Length: 460
Ligand code: URA
Image (cartoon, rainbow, N blue to C red; front, side):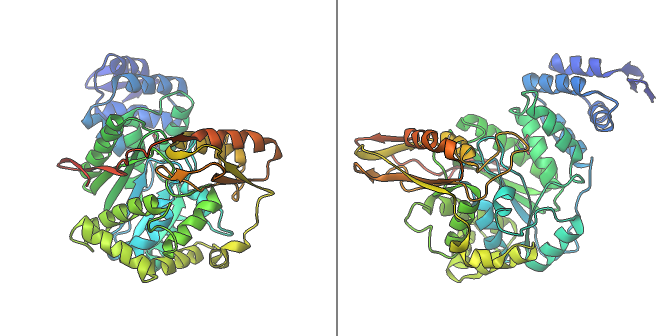
């Protein structure tokens, strides 16, 4: 029974202040208490200042495993859950916590679909210094990411892969709360992040999920320990909802591949899908991560017995051209220009194309992904504020990666922009992002750990 801003739970009348206090003191909230807070927030009967205080209490006190599962369920059920059960075969998605130059989804979705597992993917836009799959796809002329749910189902049925943005119908409580967390310094809280991500993923209609939790300077979670904690929370939730979920922790110590910026990343993805990039070159790290994640998706989709077998299938789909053909089908089904993909060189160029060189000699020891991600925003490739318009052609191509030898006069990167006023600062920031030392750096693994229901393993 509800009495104004009070609710009676087991004979006791409580109000939001008491629930905030309860969390602030480190106690856990019951399902009915969490439901009442969340429903009141969505309906507008509990004001944002009280939910902000509650979120801050969660930030400092955390949530138990049970509370996290409950919170996820409540956010999931605040909207529609897409039912794909009438579409034959397994539906498996991949979610990445985001990085710089991370265009894995653009390559992996056609690979996995070409190998016979459907990929229903709901993606995000750029967040902070990280790029977003939706912005990359929208750099393809005509490509629609705003499909309705019936259109989404029609594309997955016909093509086997679909990539759209979060609609107002999917996990609307999370959509509203994420915007509030963003402006109340309550984003970086593992139970809140995990329930936010998983409420959206579970609404897509998936049977299984592969997670790519990034770690390092260009990642959302910079330390390995925090990344592992997040991966374990995500894997626990997925399996708790009966969806087989596994995760990888992968390095974001330098940008993935060579391109940063929306259309430039599409170009790199197309070249990788055509097999022209990604073998013993600067895009090899991108393809290593892509094949491992695709391999795991094929295993969860029961097309491969092991991840290794899935990796072989994934490589095979590049070699026989089926993954590239699937990309063209996907682009056409979502209204995009196949002609633009088939004729990459016809895309408009930026007013400025600038090379950034070095006079130093030695080996590249580090390339700061955070700084390059932030610099890309100044070029026009990302948003400084929410309403900024993205310039799809802006960005940069790395000409050197960690471990490469450089001699005086070598080009480190080339950047593109229409903005006259950023040229000098971009040049300086890009150059400063490359650390050069006299000896080769120690090679570090790209895929660090594999997280599944039963535990964590070091990845070979
Ligand atoms: N991405 C999400 O969807 N939610 C978070 O809380 C953080 C990243």
